[in-house]
Amino acid sequence: MAEDHSVMPGLLMEGISHRYGRDSVLHGLDLTIARGEITCLLGPSGCGKTTSLRVVAGLEPIQGGRVDIAGMEVSRPGYLVPPEHRRVGLMFQDYALFPHMRVIDNVAFGLREGDKSSKQSAAMELLARLGLECYARDFPHALSGGEQQRVALARALAPRPIVMLLDEPFSGLDRRLRDQVRNDTLDILREMSVATLLVTHDAEEAMLMADRIVLMREGSIVQSGTASELYAQPESAFATSFFGEVNVLEGIAQGGRVATPMGTLAAPYQDGIQVRVYVRPEGLRLKEEIGGEDDNAGAEILESHMLGPARLIRLKPDDEIGPLTARTIDGPQWETGKRVRIRLDPERSFVFPATQEA
Image (cartoon, rainbow, N blue to C red; front, side, top):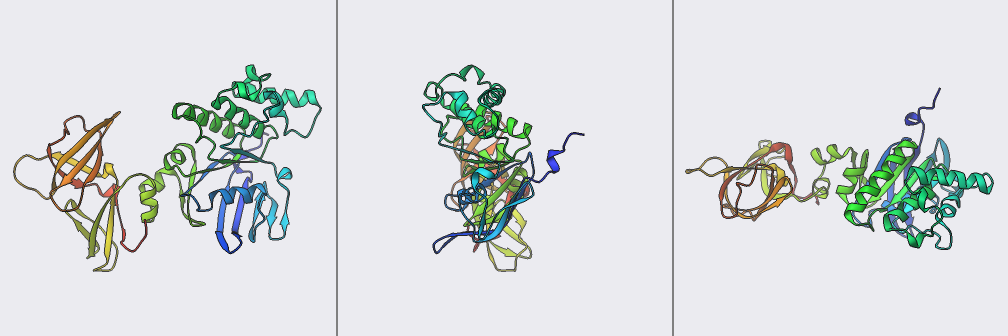
């Protein structure tokens, strides 16, 4: 019977704490990644993402907690299995290919078992899976950036790692090439049932790549879930604003609600508490102003830009709440200078205490 890699242990990080001198950078980090699962560590610079990767790779000893790979403990305070014995693959923005070695020798370099012929055979198999077999005898400098990135992936996968660690691996590629290389990378990682931990500060990239996103801030996990869960059900002002532009309105909680010029929303806080309403651009619903007033706020369209199937619109509300940004697929009728009425979509509007940092 074939092994079900999806239920086999991949990576476990439990209670990980780490510091550099007096600076604490990880605070009780807990994370489990199954074989074949792609998990993304997302967060601003300095939040502990890269340190987390270094801890898993065995490049940093930990002061608290433990790391298991495939059910075997590899790190705890005072105990550290060397990186080369962890079955961990590493792939970074800097491909770090050996310039004096041909492509096939770069890929075969990490293989420890077998003779030269069997190593080159294994390397060629991986190159073929990535569409690179025709470059096997070339040197890295003759390859494009995307081809070099695929070679780096093949080299990292050659030893059949259980865990793959990727640190901003696609940021050096142009957008069109990045999309293709990213998709190729994800396909082969899932095909080989590798537990993958990816680091990025780009929310869009995380949403495109990850089965699960782990949002970090100042060394701690703020929220974890699928892309749709973090986008549609953020648990903090920080999580809300990290996934793209938001409109921010001020208000006061009263009777479990908060009133805005564009409608009222649930605000389950003590009466009198100042709150902020975070509204995604697609959470502003527009309709034409056809004489008279209604319960929705009036506004003038300042700018209107076509972005493929959507239109990005900057609005100047009649109320003194500053410009707002809307995104709509309603069509080209929203022209600069036009008068509209705005209401909020509660499903895309989120309320948090004003004291909570975004």
